[in-house]
Every structure is written in C-alpha cells, then in structure tokens.
Length: 215
Ligand SMILES: [Zn+2]
Image (tube, rainbow, N blue to C red; front, side, top):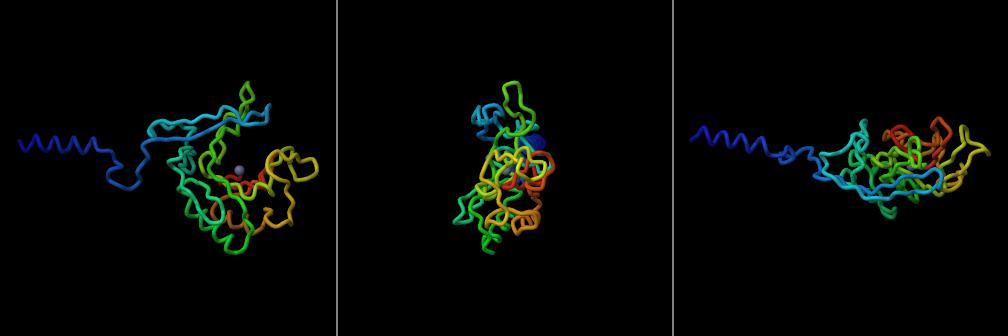
C-alpha cells in the first residue's frame, strides 16, 4: 500500500507544472495585436489579434538575445507621470523606468515615449508589398522618444538635404527635446544598453528610436 501511495505522489509531482513551484513562471497564454507595413500603400494593413498557448510560441515570436516575446503577457507598464504610460519587456522595465525618470527629474524635456508595439515593419516585403519581420518594438525591447521632434528618415546614409522624412517630425538638433549624439538622453539610454537609431549604418536614420542594436 505504501509503495502504491509513493508512486501516486511521484506521478502527481511529475504532472504539476514547474510554475507552481514559483520562480520564473511562464504565462499560460500569449496575446498580441499586430499589423503589417505595406511599402506600396505606405500604411499599416492586416491588423489582427493573435492568441495561442504560451507553450506554442514560434521562433519569430521571441527575440533570442533578450528572451523577450511579442506577447502582452511578457510586457510591463512603465508609468512616470505626467508622461503617458508605455510598455516594455519586463526584463528591461526597471532599468528603462529608472533612466527615463532620472532624465525627467533632471529637467530633460521628454514629452512622449512609445515602447511595445507589435508589427511587421522590417524585412523584405512579400509579393503584396507587406513587410515580413517583426520590429524590435514588437518584443518590447525598443523605445521611441519624442517622435514629433525626432523623425524617421529614409534615403539618409548621412544626414543631409537628400534625407526623406517618412514618420514623425523633422529632426532639428539644437531644439530642446531633440536627440543628439552625446546628448543626455542618448547617454542615459546607452547606459541601459540601448543604442540610438540616429547613429545606425544604412539608409535609414531613426532619431526617435533606441534598442539593443539601434535598429
Ligand atoms: Zn522605434
């Protein structure tokens, strides 16, 4: 009889999810709203809500370096009044919260921060002109600061008159709230491992944008 009870107890233990023991509990489900950026229409299309068990995350739904996913369940809200709240991956949340709060305390004019936002805005377009890869905002590992003063430019190997503003407002270094190399915001973000999109190689310059790679 004792033997049988021991077997039953072992079976129950084996069937109990690891999460029940505390520690790094994984969410039960993964939910997110997404879209595709269409390069021909120059607008977002194919908006949809995705929901599936967390155990069925696909490789593209998780950023391998950070372990952050596209799931709302992996995001944490950062609330620094009077700034409107925004979400980032919970692995980054405390560092980003401290850095932004410190900048605001120091008088830095930060009016708007956008973090988690799932969408396929990267990668080669498919036949319909829809981009195919998730942006780093999709994983909650990128933030945009003051987009109305720090636009995204295309055709912009080096910043100059040939650059074409495709999102946000014009970049005018010297105006308060504008990101610059070596400026307080760029330095603070670098301190938490986020590189500035104003310094990335390639045809685009994304002056509002910060992420581990800058892209
Ligand atoms: Zn961005």
